[in-house]
Length: 164
Picture (spheres, rainbow, N blue to C red):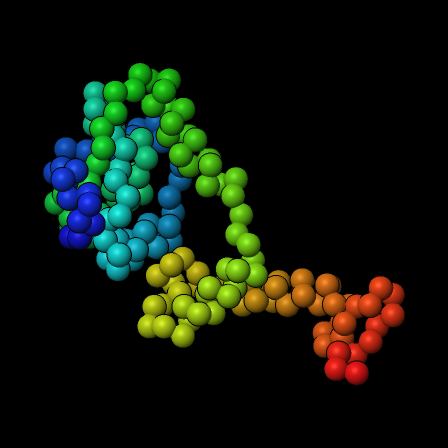
């Protein structure tokens, strides 16, 4: 069990927390596996958000499942005094806000390429080989579209081979 130093004062017994029975987010096996690998490698760096009145986790249900799967006895959590509507709204926006963001494909490809040369398995950060290939293919297609054809530069209608 590894809770980041700055969060250790927030540690609570894991068996005092419950999954949110109203959680509308679905966590499949792959999702839990990625989170479990993240907790193993990096430890807990973000506290769970828990409704004090019920002990239900509003944000971090998957992290709680992963920590339990790892046999952790404590997790870092902050407690809030939310009414039912506020608790539900926060739980939804916590998940929905990440759905509304996207990756910058070029930057992501560059970062993944750099990580690929390290000892970090890309599966540990949620990408399998097929996804990495698809990302690279997508980026290559995007770059081809910007330059006309591969290896040539678009000069506003006239295609001129690069280097001439």
